[in-house]
Image (tube, rainbow, N blue to C red):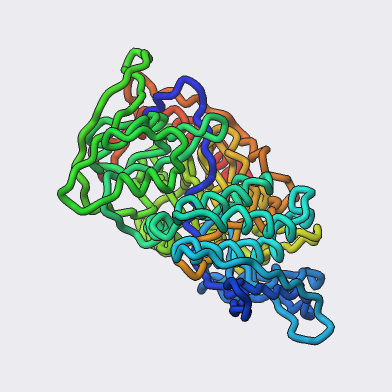
Length: 520
């Protein structure tokens, strides 16, 4: 894999591919006044008696929580992790108390005469209420969140366009000081979910916004996709799509522009680097095709140990945690076991995350017993460990995991689970450091609200957020000029595995593990 960036590429963890759950926040009624009004009655959250959390997983075992103090607002969050909620987190639900003693807030707002803005007003109240009940910071970045709703509604009332009204919601969310709490439009949300469905019509690019500059950079290209055939590489910066500048354009919106009907074309202006490392700008015209988003690719490496013994190493690359990731991983590893593979390299480099449930299920392919997979911390500071129950690993063969600065969120959960439980050695570079848990709710108009509702720690209680996970062994990102002498058989042509220095380091670590195993 070629990295054309001079400095390590950072990514904003936006490709969470979260599932949707429609949470009805408020009912709206009209007041008999000279002007139409919204009347929003928002009960305070009441905490039900917490229940012990146990959810079924798969034939290898299940997940378990042992913290009886976990609050009700996060109880449903973890249940939905167990049911397969997509993305970096799970979807939270609201807990309402209909008793007369429940506190409530009733605020009346003038209804816009513009139908599009009127619809967004309801979206505003939905978003405000969900954040009020679930956002991880109960001080809302040290501001009066109820007052913020009133201010935003007043600012929205005179507007005449849907886009302008949505921008007011985005402005309100930005005051929370959390870039991961955001709203996306209905079109962006539908596009956003495609990565979990397994196929799309586009050019085969994964893109993300560089957090410091906002520039859109290529995270990876799908093999044999139009983008890969056009020579677009990891780290390239997208400047224009069909002549439209991308300054300030979010990654979801840019991804939507890249997608389209099969047979149509799209033109990109890309800032890249040539083979000599010199910067260059070029235009690339590509056809849109049906892209298969299989999350797992694999091959068997014939590895020659120092003593001359030839063994089989299974190389498995997991590009994203989609709905089929765990099943495909299980099938791949089972097939390799039947073919006599004796050790494994799990490649999580440039995997931005995806289904948390998929990440937990993948961990159970490699782990035994009742190991802790991850710890979550809610807005009140309560910690909830997520444990396996009677897990049964498919294989106990030696394992190394490759990570880098593009490995984020669910990738970090998996890497931390395997590392902290003593199952795998981590090789590569420090991971991205996305330790926030987000919920997603599809709102009444088809838009989606993402809310940071909790954070997570590794099984050994290491804080990952903005820190990442340091590997046990570092490796260079450079590609070797010539293939190594050991034989390497691959299933697909054009593989660069034989020139990947991190693969060589991984094989050396496997030699060490196998020699230790033989000595014992």
